Image 1 (tube, rainbow over the protein chains, first blue to last red):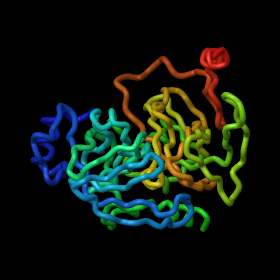
Image 2: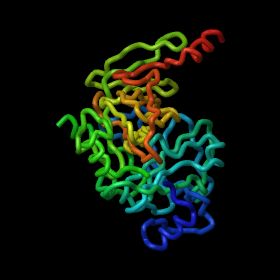
Image 3: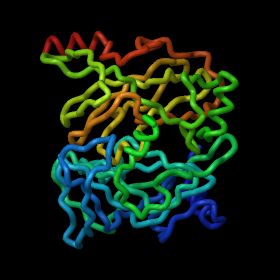
Image 4: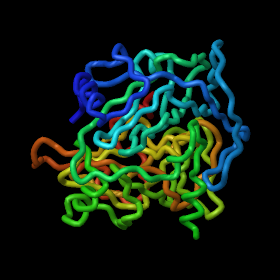
Length: 176
Length: 172
């Protein structure tokens, strides 16, 4: 079951959901709109490798915005710190942003319980398109769980977003 | 409602969720990580043609603008919970899509799921790597209508089997 807007608000009041800063006008009937942060990380190599660390460059998106190219992946943090130890967050784009051909995640919409962070968005554009820091870019929904709850303790928890892929750590573990 | 990791483990024990092979270390707080089978179908020349390819240990490079069909190393399915197939954030950060807006599994379907792999940038992937995750969802009531469709029981990546689409494509 998905939480309604008013349920998100009361869960927030109880401390079962974290959204910081929270602005009531960003609350929807069954989701909350979040904003694009300023920190952006891009890979400096054109060819990426899931089995080794990939070089990246971190920069700040200026007020003039950032032109997304279709052939690159852009890792940008959410402006808000969000998460929950009780309800499972699932992120998605807003229809206004989808209509511009912007993906905000790459088949990775499911957030772990206990992952309370500025999440790393995986921006990908179908056509060249300009995005701006602070713009409303996506929305988060919250879902009730079934079963005993455990919390995220994974490899991204101590990092400040946007974090590049740490897939190579899986790779090494697997072949060890 | 979405099953938590401990609930997935219990469901596997009770036979309500099928994951084979099952490894407890692949459980997440609310999903299960699956691995990439070495078997791929890569685009061949001509419309809707595929070539079988086995990913070597040095890996395989996904090229933007092309769909490669992969498969989960695990057989996955459930008669009781609805399965959603997705990627992992580590893999999304590399610009790899695991499916093309077709994430919903049918109740009763059990197979090595076919993955629709596409990449934003060129990227090297490896056989048996941890590549995606599945989540399981409660339904309102038990279903007597279980999936027995054309992709049931697949153990390798399978290309489109919808003859109606194929006919239309050939005509055009």
